[in-house]
Length: 109
Image (tube, rainbow, N blue to C red; front, side, top):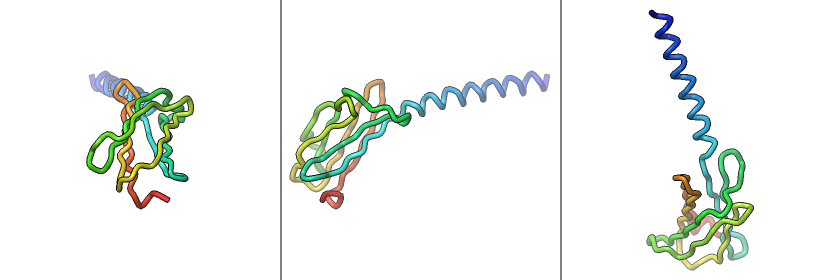
């Protein structure tokens, strides 16, 4: 009886570990930086694959949508730096894969 119970617990743990690793493989990231008056963003999954053709929305420090578009085949989205003190870049890579990046004015060249 004790061996059967330990076996069952072991099977459940293995199942949990296997499903958790596949979930981490689809975690999405977005990173942004400013160069020469242009904001560049790069979007990628945790396994290194680029996020292609995904919706990007950029909000100012008041929460107003100021720019939107889609990532290219390299996971890049770029736009002219607007006159505001902070930006929130929101990536929607479908199927609930979302990421955000806050770009503060002190990160601007």
